[in-house]
Image (cartoon, rainbow, N blue to C red; front, side):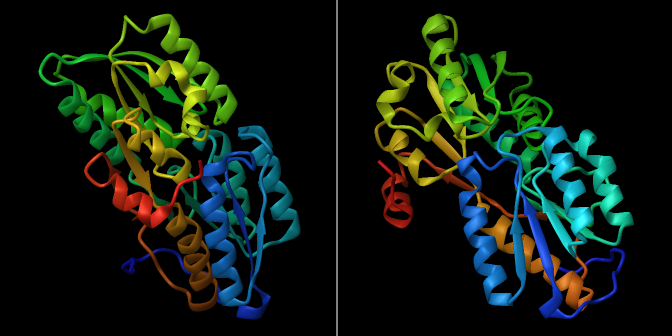
Amino acid sequence: LISAFLLPMVAAVEAADVTIAMVPKALDNPVFTTSREAARKAADELGIELIWTASQKADAAEQVAVIESLIQKKVDAIGISVNDPTALKDVINKAVEAGIVVSTWDSDSPESDRLFYLGTDNYAGGYKCGEIMIDLLGEEGGKVAILTGVIGAFNLEERIRGFKEATEGTNIEVVDILAGEDDINKSVEVVNTYTLANKDKFDAWFFDGGWPLFVPIDTLEPVKNFEGKVISFDTFPPMLLFVKEGVVDVLVGQDFEQMGRGSVEMLYKVLTEDAEYPEFNDSGLEIVDSSNIDEVIDRKGTTW
């Protein structure tokens, strides 16, 4: 599915001896559950060992320590969802120097020596959200608050950059960017508090990740009663009822299954077949709104 491209080659190893580590941003972030299940299924099918490991919460320094431990274990390959591209650059390069094949998924470190990235074109995704916001708010535009995860995370910064560039030159103004620290409870608190305090002072939310939508709808009572527009990244089952009930207008989803499965399969082929891939591999986007929400619920189900 992904075309070949010239990249540095590594010595092939025997399939039975392959150990691949997958490192999400954090263990407590439910958005990675789909990736984990897909990665494990791929590893089982390939007959290889998979290590799924991360710090409990999203933290760049702790993620560096996790990578250091994997270097010491001499794993064959590591796929990383990077918390901070700058903070992780040196340890990624260290792993590569140690002979480990390193890729990134979900969130990139493009200035590092990682072999390839598999995930959303986050800039394009953010730009798409900006275009949707323009349609929702119309010519009058309005004031938009953005909820992000960890400030500095490359994938999230790219979504914000895309959103801002899409809305540049319109009557849409980004008035605040708030951090939920990739944490569900923190994100819910931030969104509820801000909405209550500013409900008459802004016109729309853009969540660049779905953290506050992993709760029952009534938990987000202020947003439920908010008369403005809401766009969120991600299309996980817990989030779908927010669209069904009209609390969220549009979800822009990522293919986390492909990120998990694809990363394992691609790293495996690099190790065993000297396969070559482009540096950037787009896993695609999914748009969910009132026009297709019933079909998506039928396909994915819901949690609540």
